[in-house]
Figure 1 (tube, rainbow, N blue to C red):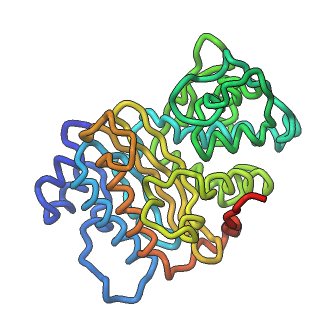
Figure 2 (cartoon, rainbow, N blue to C red):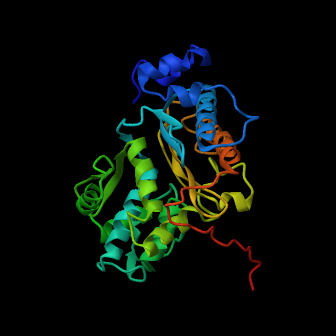
Length: 337
């Protein structure tokens, strides 16, 4: 949770005081308070500063508590660092971490994407998000690849339990620690094969995503599998990707998480060649409308405006030349047949 003197309080003093407030609470004073350079030639540094101003404006309007870490490839300054080392409930954003652990086992030959897992009535989470609870016919079986697709696109709750059948909570946490993410952990329960999605920090979530596109987190095949799901047309579209064309949405890999009053989202925007250009981890809670899990929630609306502005800001820039190129998945609607 945010401290009593949080960024919302500081921003209430007006943008003119943001540089001072940033020094007090750890926000990036230069990135957020720099004067507009809209008429100047775009550079990574100018883009980062503009992203900081957009974040400050939109989060102030939405209210509540925000913790975030956002970078633009090639910029010497972090665009946003807002309570970025706060350990908080990540909710479904941590499904990226769960998928990472499962795919790590695939890379080591302990699992295969075509192996089958059983979907029983007892393992199905009733209601909530996903598709397994809609089947209405159990038992059935699906491949592990199908489980991960449901986990990362429609954020399927039952898919979490299915992942737990092949990667118990303790093992997931061990894998994440070994990869350098000690604060990104699922929360074990009495059943070793089940868990709550647990905690992370904005910085660690951001760094996990950057390790993914750098090719240091997983094998090339597993990296492509994970990113392909996060960039799919049916992946989350209410937030960062909402005000974008279908082609533009394919340039964004994203995962949202929501529970109680929290509305989170983290992901990567790619340049036109497929290189990562902007990485974001945005965590929010405490806004009005805790019972609204749709696109009209204030934090989700704020992220939609941020997403459009972020993409426009970096659209003419070139992404990280050292990262793996991740071509946008091909999207071709079908009429059946």
